[in-house]
Image (cartoon, rainbow, N blue to C red; front, top):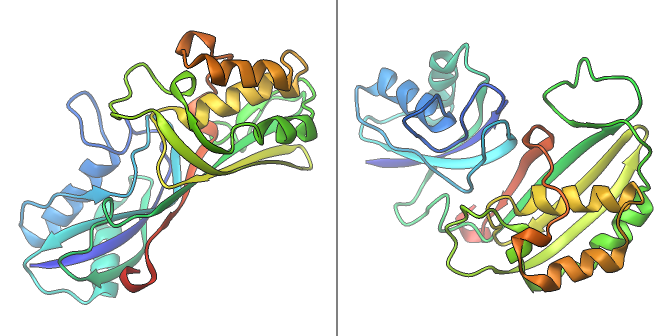
Length: 250
């Protein structure tokens, strides 16, 4: 058996998330079925992270194991041919040692959240960003965001369905910047709780709209209570952008 690392780009709109489930199509199912069509083998995909329904990825790292020998480039080409017309692409493929694992070897994950801040409705970016039609103060959002950086109990900012045993996470980066009509939020940590990024973005948007102060955000964090959350941002603006591994395992 050879283990192959796959870097996936996908539009999460048509999927019920990354992880295989019974009630609808998923990214995992699409990749596993493509691999089966090529090899005839039952293949299971493991990924660096999980994305919900509607959430996208620019570079989600995953791995599969197959017995049939393949040149990594030819495997990438074959998978992409079988994945059509699903909006999933394998943009890189590499053979890995047996002890390398897309999830458990990963030491860092990064997300980007995109808000389009303008009055007119979205056309080309519909389903690819959160449309906020009232002015956002990105500088105020960034300043408030720094209160969340560091090690905290993020209970307020996690889904009630989150299965993580410990709500304490170390947030390494949470930056907010404006690029024309777009407000971009970038978050990085070793790992995140379920809905953590969307919950942080939603509450920061309230700060940007002038409905919350930075102090209220700090109080919500300290409350350690989901009921104290201001707003959970919609999934369509969220992108998984990077998985980081120790140099010797990349």
